[in-house]
Length: 378
Image 1 (cartoon, rainbow, N blue to C red):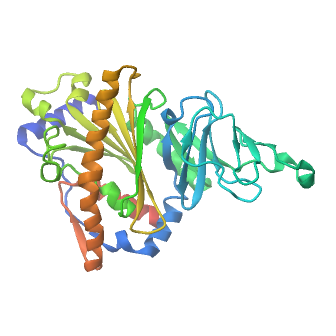
Image 2: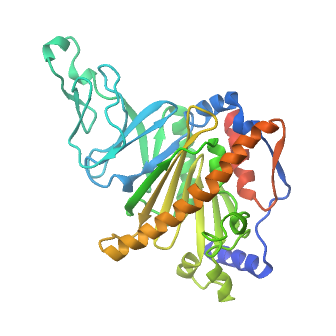
Image 3: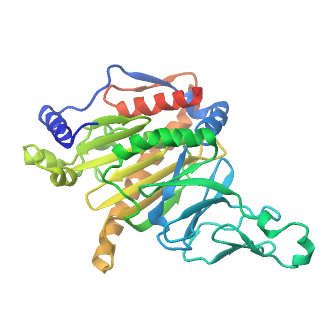
């Protein structure tokens, strides 16, 4: 791993030379990988079942009884903070007739009651009550607990593990995650707000949106371009994961090397891509986390966005500040990136045999799609 001084020197060289990190060659990626339903089925198994999936953060559910739901590969998931220090994951399915127990998210629950027949489960997933108990006396309550799914909390990032292969891959990724997320602990951040959308994009195309700085001046002239230097970033890989660091215009205006880690944080933006589809955008005072998941149709995905502040926000001015940041990000992605991406997705069908081009100045795209291909072969 590069030291902080190495990174500062590398960034200063890019700024002086008006350059960016490059790969050795261009990369041509087949369009069919974004539209082929057979490939999507293989991804469902190889990437979203046999690999660990980052599903959310501990900061989303800071108190006992807080919870949220998600769905991966048609598996409804319930994530619950069942004690002050423990977070658990269950199949969000009543053991009686299979009804979803909960939808969305909530705070400080004491139990979960099925809306169909009022079977009740505690925070540990144990069945504690069911009407007309004598009708079910041949099946003990302890045989009707919710099915638990392995969940790991790594520095506040919650990783679902569905099977032994995924567990092995999670363990092999820990060393990379420790290096990549060295200074970030989402257990200690404060959740401001979340937002969920369903763009008509293949999930990989949604991830692609975050993997290069080449487009900033062209697509975001009023939102991001006044803040970030376009087509200039450092690239490093950590196993399957990625780190990209781009200078803000303030770094360029200093006309000198950044002196210390604090200055580096203030004058850059850092993107950490946790394979396969979680994007962590790091700012000095806050962190943005995007979770992207495929849906049933190859042309649709689910995108969840959350903003976390490093410090509590208790004043009106602090809330206004974070709301402005939240809306700026939503505008750039939902109003600018994704509408263009939806047009790209439609255009793929015009010539499904062609290959799109990733330039040498887009190493994040190279690495991400190479890792996808490797995962599908495993």
